[in-house]
Length: 483
Ligand code: MSP
Image 1 (cartoon, rainbow, N blue to C red):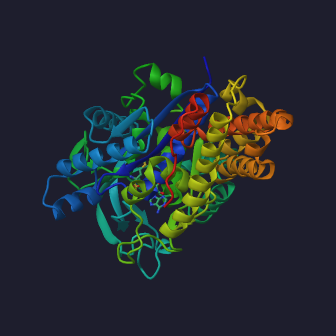
Image 2: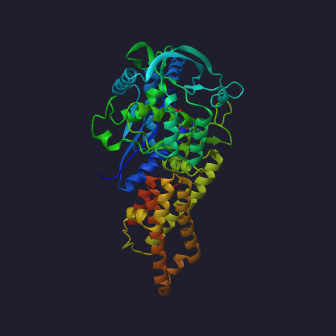
Image 3: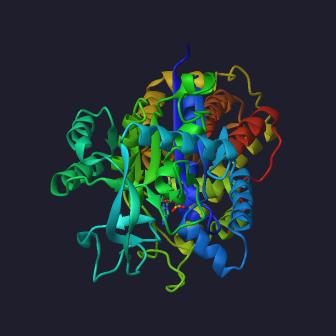
C-alpha cells in the first residue's frame, strides 16, 4: 500500500458565518494535502461543522429560527467559501448527520456499559463561548479572556467520563511523541498544564441543553458538544461507534495530524486522546497548532471594528492571492498580524510587480524574439521532490513553515527579475553575436519560472497552472492587476 496521510481541520461551529481564522486553518490543511499528493501519498482531508450545543441553540433563539435552519444556512456558507478558495477536501462532516448521531450514541452506550461513563454531579464554571469548563486560574478579572464574558456557574446532574486515571498514560504519550504536539512550545505548554492541574473526570452530558444528541441510556441528557464534535474525526471515516465499517477507515486511521488553532489546544491535548483510548481506538498521531490572526496588532472584534472579513479579502484580491496572503503573513505557529494596507502592499510587491511582471516579461521576450521553448518539459513534480531546492522546500512544508517556503519561491522570482534587469535580453536578441547569450538567459528564466510554478502549485494551484500554460503557449494573460 502507498503511504497514507490523513489530516483534519477542526469542525467549525455553525453558529455564524465562516471567518478568516477558519480560512487560515483550512487553507493550510489544503496546502499540506496538495504537497502530500505530489509525494504520491494517498490522502484524506476532513473538514466539517460542529452543530450542536448551547452556543448554537442560543444563536438560533436570538434569530428566532430553529437550530437546524440556522446551521443549514451556515453550512452552505462554509461550503461556498471552501469552493471559492479551492479547498479540495474529501469529506465535509456534519454533527447533525444521522450516521454521526448514531455512532455517538453507540460510543456513549459502550463507555457507559464499561463503567467509563458514570452518573454523578458536576459543579463548575462553564463558558458557553468556548463550550468548555473553566478553572478559576483560566479567568482574567472573573471573565473568560477569549470571550470577555463571565462563565456560568453550573451545578447539575451529569454523566462523567473517567479522566483522572488516564493522567500518567497521557503525559507519557505526549512526552514520547506517541501523541506528538507541534510546535514544541505547545507541547511544553500542555505538559506544564498537566503537571499543575491534575485531570478531573469530565462532564460529558448536559441536562439543560436540549439541542444535542440524547444519551441512549438517559434521554433527559444530551451529549457534551466537544465529545460529539471530536468523534467527527472518526465518523468522517465511517466509524459507526464500534468499528470502521469500510476500507476508508481501515486505510486512513489514525489521523496523521489534527490541525488546530491554539485556542482549542487544551481540549485536543486531553479529552481527545483519552476518548480514543477509552473507545479502544488507536490514538491520533498528533496535533499541529497554529497561532491566531490579529488585525492591527489586536484580536479581531466587532467592538473594535477591526474585523477583516474573509469575503472582503477574496473580493479584493481573488482566491489565489488570498491563500498566498494568509500563509505568507508570518510564522504559522505564532500569532500573525494583518492589516488591509499591508496586504495591498504585499499583493502589489510580490504578486503584481514580482511574479506577474516576471511572467509577462518572459512571455513577451519569448514571443517577440521567436525564442522557442524546447527541452524544458522537465517533470516538475520530480523536481520538487528530488533536487536540492525541492528537498529543502519539502522540509519546510513538513514543518508547516509556509512563510519560509514561500520566501524560497520569491527568492527565485526576485533573482529572475534581477537577471532580466542586468542582462537586458531584448538588447542581446538584436545582435547576431549575442543571440547565444540571449538563449542562455531565456532558458534560465524559463527554468526558473517552471520551478516557481512547480513549487507554487500547492499554495496557488490555478496560478501555477496559468504560468505553465503561458510558458507553453506563449499567450499572455495578466495574472494580478495592481491594487
Ligand atoms: N467547534 C470547535 C472545534 C471542534 S473540533 C473537534 C471550534 N470551532 S470554531 O468555529 O471556533 O473554530 C475553531 C478554529 O478556528 C480553530 O482552529 C481556531 O484557532 C480558528 N480560529 C478562530 N479565530 C482565529 C483567528 N483569529 N486566527 C486564526 N485562527 C482562529 O472551536
